[in-house]
Image (tube, rainbow, N blue to C red):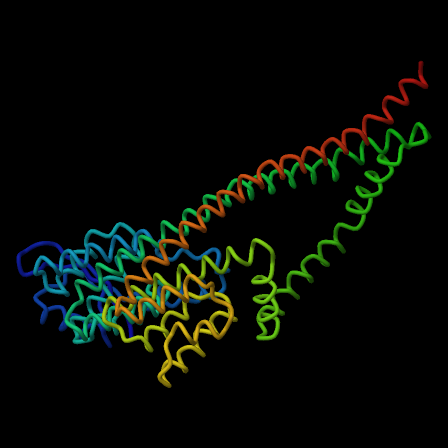
Length: 409
């Protein structure tokens, strides 16, 4: 259906603007007048939207700019506050649209508002914007609408989004410095090998002097890179493409997931990260009134490892047959004992949500501590490794120069 951008006057005489879905401009004007808005300017945005969608399909996913988690949390918190103050949902969405600074956010909120005004539920209106709202988010909103507790659910969603955003920020912050050091060191060494070493090698070749083994190794390595850079680049691209294609298959993805879980240090840390997200998300869903089986089905979306995801699915089927969640997760042998025991305690005491929150807090603290330890160890190791490579390159270049000076004397 075409989308029309409009400007006009509201019932109170104020200037208003937004977008509206309609079959034609005439229908759009009629819908606006019926809602108390007198349009002064109306233009179709369908073609521009289609062009933007087509361009986005061609862009790599890394270039796209979805709504940041922090902004989504703030938006959810504001919507909850407006509903708690007695503002109607349509008016609350209009207020959020008016104050939005990003054009994409303003357009999205206007479209959601129009669908709600036409009689759709908020959850159904959000399904048209899955690039911003996840299935988990939409499912919780739907549960809140069915339970007539949308304000409470939105508060929990905001808290969940904020905690996840802080957790991701901690992980990124811990890994940023080592990654920057590695990239800078690789760039410096690449410049030396590709530009400096060939010039030094030319000088040595003109002198016909016997070169040390380290110098021969460095010159040979540089010659290979500068002579066969195109085949080597194509080989690197082919390897990356092959790995990507392999990971796209179920067998390749399963091999990768198994290797990650079995890797020393990385595997236990990854399990803690996934268990923290699993416990936090499941606790939020259960506290929002979602039943356990639908909650387990929704929580699979935040579990990135296929083996753990399969274990959750098997647990879901076992729970449907009458078994406890702690028992079924324990049978997989993949989840840590602390999570299993806390789930069992929660099932026996009837406080499963609170136990899941506690275990999520515990795993998030452990992950933060592990990442802090990892960066503490990685920084000196990377510094020593870079220093060793640079010392080797300096010796490989300076030793022949000292030999030439001795011969000239």
